[in-house]
Length: 118
Image 1 (tube, one colour):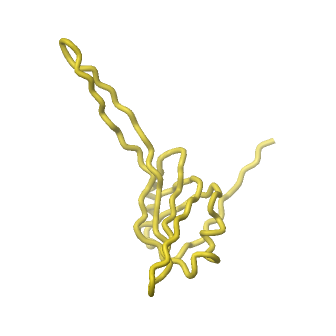
Image 2 (tube, helix red, strand yellow):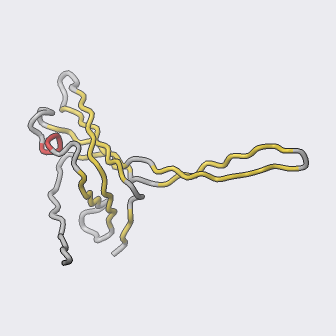
């Protein structure tokens, strides 16, 4: 039996500073007699963004920490281009005096964010 699921996306308001989960490469080299040995290693960063919450307790994203979710990011909501990231949600809350609660959200992905231009 094959089952398929369609994710349901909900808009999260008051979000800033989205960073996709991207791969980065590091070059390592070792000097040997008569030359150099080189290697390249790759690592995957976490996706992240800041959500300006209401109280840091009842905000919907707080209830989703630890869950594996899809995130669909539009740089411009009036265009079709978007990015998709799937990963486990982590949060870190800051309660500044006289300002909105800052909720730093991380998305621990197993693969890099995928970009779609249509």
